[in-house]
Image (cartoon, rainbow, N blue to C red):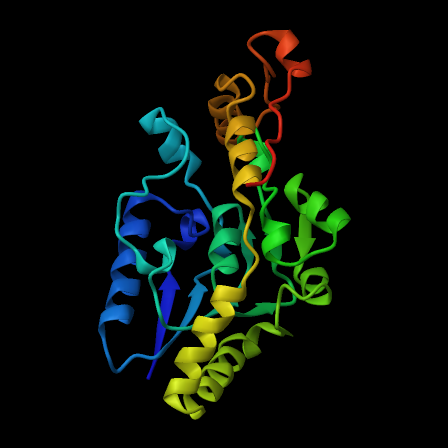
Length: 255
């Protein structure tokens, strides 16, 4: 059987507030636990698939990022069943990362994608183009927070199918039905194998990324969110000590 998991907070472009994260976790836990459910189709409501972090909630809490305490097998990598993204609109920041976690992807022709880390943190999303197997210049463009159309991501192989809006869910369900037509062991084993083959970031690069995420004035993290909420140009500091601009963390040898 196929389960439809649909983000339903259209008035906030399905931004990942605490309640929506909890409801999403409940849905994926149900999907994982129910032995009759074999494939999930994951979509949004309204003009966005998901706008990512709820920055107004972050400002209210006084801390950056989102509450990640809810157990969600889709997010922690323990989900052992395939998920097909049906991207109905904007997929930004954390919403892009939700799409990135899926096994197969269908998007409407008007969808817009952005990996927003460069706009909100002290390091851009360096890993995402690597995960997608993109050429270096395109991965760099993605890391620096440029927007991508669904058509372009389809051209570079990030999206499997590009469709008109009325074809979105039918196409996703058609793909799900194909998976269900396979021998059960073939479906399970192939998804498992493909996930093991997915690109990963080397530990020394991850360590450098962690260091670079601390390399700058962290007051800029909240300033970026405040400027977004107030619809104004941000006033960034850059570095606590201006000389830090020239004292970059070093990449350690691999292994």
